[in-house]
Length: 307
Ligand SMILES: C[S@@+](CC[C@H](N)C(=O)[O-])C[C@H]1O[C@@H](n2cnc3c(N)ncnc32)[C@H](O)[C@@H]1O
Image 1 (spheres, rainbow, N blue to C red):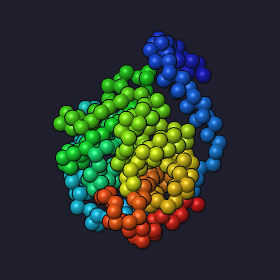
Image 2: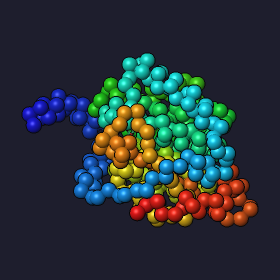
Image 3: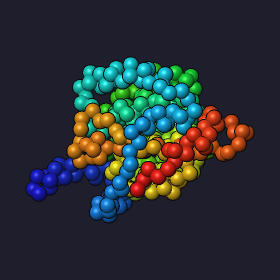
Image 4: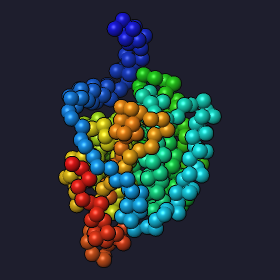
């Protein structure tokens, strides 16, 4: 108790500066904290995990399996992790002020989606050291087209962590990157309105029900048919469960993560992430790269994976 009080007292000048420079973000943060507290006692959903999600996802995208692009991912993964370690940064569970760095299963899913969908517009929330950002940008570079917009609100009272933001993103990749600082609640609506339509969305900011639901609904409203939405850490709240139910005519996958360190507090000490693909309209006229996906082939993934 006394220790906590002393910690707060030590940060008092930074808190005062934060309130003075960005009162709107402070208000949004307090509101988010309030809703986070309300969520604490809600029961978490039970998921049925898609053990074979990767094959299913490729079938759903209408692209070959085994994936020819995943070898490139595995060649790049150790280089990116090493580049962070060479900067003296620990990588994995909880290393960014309690937030996790992107883990290999999630980032590989995003890599494949970026390579196969060949998106023009990708939006993500939650950057931290930029593991997911780096892989999306590398995949866009290989595609020779596309842009990534990343919204991120780094911990406001920790200058050391602020210096680490985007550390994994090298100079070569930055030309396709727009980094937008601020909370997703404040920044996402305006960004999506300006983009009009997006091809791929990753939610990896704060994983409260209040925030995740807001982001998924915002992104879904402008996601083009055939586009894909990915949400990390879906075992931490009920949003993906109810979202997948509400949109159960679209193919979705519940995927087990593979964190760099195990975390006993999470689903099977690993955690889950989810993927939803917005169904392309029926009929041959669609120009979506996913038009090859027949509803027949995807039905099996549409069935209730949520209890
Ligand atoms: C799980 S980490 C992101 C990991 C990253 N995607 C990666 O692959 O390494 C979450 C990030 O979201 C940021 N964040 C927290 N609350 C946020 C909010 N309301 N809006 C936007 N970003 C937020 C955190 O500061 C942190 O940088």
